[in-house]
Length: 110
Length: 118
Image 1 (cartoon, chains in turn purple, cyan):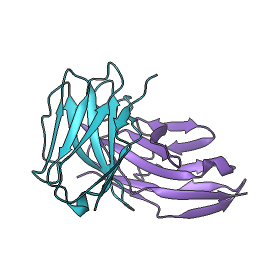
Image 2: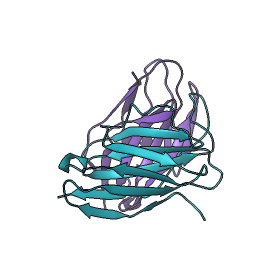
Image 3: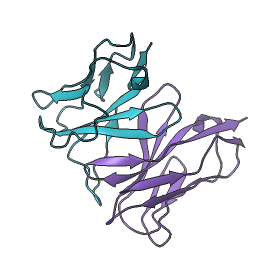
Image 4: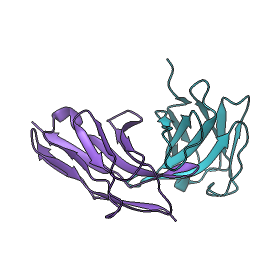
């Protein structure tokens, strides 16, 4: 079956640091890939997505590229802010639902 | 505006009692999904509805769990004879159409119901 393996947290960075959260997947076919974010006290929100190989999803300074050859979808941001502190989930389509990773808690220190 | 809403936001119950969790999806969304988020774990898919129909109930953890959807809108997840291991955050999501590989349809999540079974 489909699965998602995410970098284990928690991750703590200083403001303006470079962020990478690793995500690799196992899937049959050609799934769409997503990053969802859960801010403290809030529900999950879609951060970005990519629907086919070599697509790059981007939003709010975050980027991730769908790499079929390495089955990866790593999340990156060049300069993180305190407001980026949240839990980040990598996910893929497992029709009819999504399969999620276990989440990575990110804390940014001023 | 209307995003996905869930009620109650928090529910504390005693072991053995029944609970009912409610989800109001975004208007016009035909697909609705229930997930469970346990402490320190990812999201566990429970069940989905296409319209009022739930074609596959195999993701429900036990026969104490049931779900229904009426009028293509509101859904309820019922847990009978609750156990302590049922304690979790129950998340509901909806999408315009079923999520398909290679598709663009996004799942929109509600804030969740935190269930605590004492």
